[in-house]
Length: 332
Image: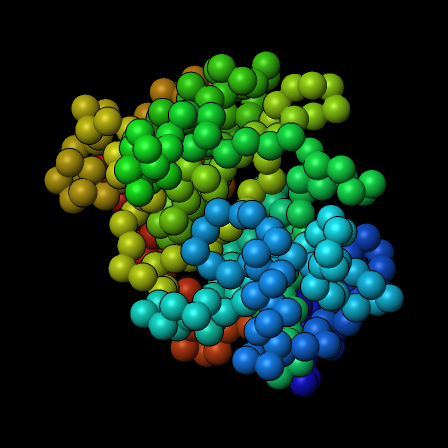
């Protein structure tokens, strides 16, 4: 297959991974963007066995992988996986599901390159039959293979199927998460500000699946806790008929909603400012983050153009960005 842009950074003029992508995602190891196997019936036995080995929540198939002699391969028995591969989902009711790897990759790259959000290292990789998949480097595994302690927000808030039902990870509102920071994080205002920025990003880029298990805290060498790198960022509105927010209660209780939010059922800038204030983030930080997202960013369009979407999906992604930006900037 012929590539024109780096399937890692989306930098133009590359027919494989750029040196920057190799450094960030693959620890400076030169690896191929092509896998030695296809995601088809002939490979299902090995793939199905591999899926069982890794316990990560979610309905999408996730394969555990490592680097072996310059190739990305499925993790052998008894070895700690270093990468997660997410193929195109089999669930056929998802619209444009074949573009989900490209969507997640693009959205993660926008978060990092445009808005400087700390994200899990990621790229696209391709099965032997040239079908794309999303690959991400595990950030909960140290170079020596030992695990870093990490807990998602559903666990930290005590949400379980038994107590909260099958949709436990979608219950509550984003303001509930303040309790996670004040309880477990010493420098909680610093980490809460990062969380605030991520919530704004998810709204602008129509990620309606940012549920409680898609945020987590990670233990540092100093025995403190910080917000984990962002992961599972995707414009979900391109694939399902989504709500503005993944959590049933939205940003916060209705008593805090702006007039336009009450009238239209959609938030505006004032709602996010209120949300930042309720998180106890300093006013100057709130204003800085709000302004960063309020301005139309030309680099977003550049990355969309370099992405592995077809022309139709590029138009849809751009339209989604413009529509959310317009909502965000309307008078409250």
